[in-house]
Image 1 (cartoon, rainbow, N blue to C red):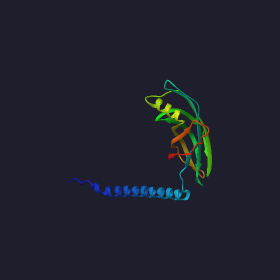
Image 2: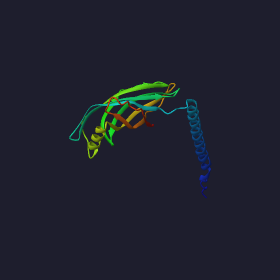
Image 3: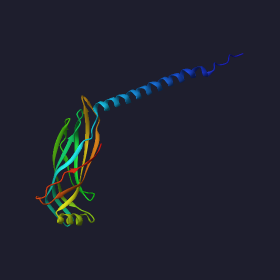
Image 4: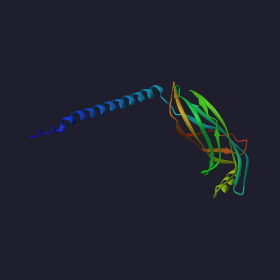
Length: 199
């Protein structure tokens, strides 16, 4: 008479112990990483960056047959209030739009912003024979006649944070400064525009 095969249940307890051990190790690692991130965050105490438009002017404005030519000069103020976080700006793009239509665009040279630093960016954006659609040209002409125009200034930047020797991966920062009220008369002073920031 043949001997019966050993029951397969003998291997199961070993398998379940291994799975439980791996799960416990993974859970412990996740908890440790979470605690480390929390400790770093508490130690660094990151603060929001502050962006404002300090000055804006329009030169060479010409609107003919729904086509715009103009030069927009902006002074953008970037304030890093953090005492332990520096920032690499690896790619910065600035655009000016009117009534949701982009009229001028330019890039800013990459730069590094140290801790507790204020950096002023002078940006020149040129609208060259830009076609305006719908009622945009008419509205812009009316605002020009009134002596001032409301623009949206948008900044898109690829940034990295630096804390000590550690550097983060790239993050995309989007900034909206709206409305930016620009006077055509040089006798009227520019009022600072505060910007919304999304990182």
